Length: 459
Image 1 (tube, one colour):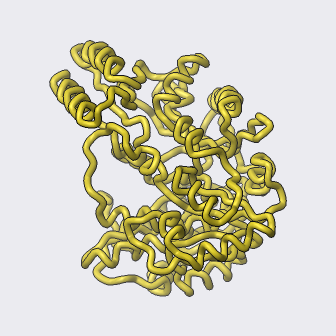
Image 2: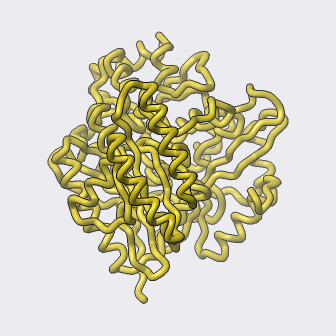
């Protein structure tokens, strides 16, 4: 079986700027991760746990934008990066963009919400408009539209309404049906009547011994998803959704119910849709997930030429339709590699940047064409804030020292101490890209990094 790798095209961001119609102008990046939370406001969803320390960590994922922007660009951040971390990046020859730091940000607020409450940041961003700068968020909700209006910056992205619509799993499911894209047996439910019909059909699958999964249309990172293995459990979910909808005074909902399928691997691939309707296939990676929650990526994905061609053709089909529906920019597509080698080429569409998007510039520079890499986060349990120099000491000899070298390249340090204010002990995450010349060396590096950070196999 012949395998093929799909190297990232050089200078991804230049290509993205050209595709969305803003070539050669300064970009203002905003890392408003989990924008789905904004899109889902007012929706009839599954029960939610109130915000906790994890929210503070997710909101500090905004620092990923620091390494996606170029030296002539700008980035809005919730907090100033650790000075030693910036020195570490400089030592690798990485030039960071101009930073606009929010003062007195709230842990449970996104970077966009914090920026809207900071007069100084609003003024500094407004001064960029006459210089031609444009706003390029992680994803566009009404909050990012408010930031654009407050600063006078043009959005280099579609409207919140378009992004929200395209990102819906109901949209993905129906689009796959329309275009003849292979997907698991399932049903899109935009009304209570459609839910009732889907539950009746799914109950037959459950009675035959299958499992089904119920997904909120705008769920993200394992939230708003339930794996169901009994008709009784599915009936309870149906009643709960009906009750919530009745309290809201609506029969409009957004859910997908699908047969649970056994897979060999999760895949994530990305394309860029241009304002002119062009579609550029960017890359495909193996996605590492646990319980529906994203944990990282392996690259390159070990796919055959035929498997990759299926994804490319699907990207072309989807991209053309998204352009017709008014969308342009980055599109992330989740797919499944099955045990028999076949592919389910579209599980859902993400109308925003993806975790893999933030790895691209580092790949271009630090991962050689014949190298392998693992993007992941290392979970930490801390009793006090850990400055960067301590991490550097712990991982002495394991950090990447130069382009093409083996080791860990830390691409977000803000998430290590983001939850420190919630009390002690607290949970943090150290994000990085492990680079090596072989899979064996990659695994050895990953193990040693985890050992030095005190991470058990269960983590």
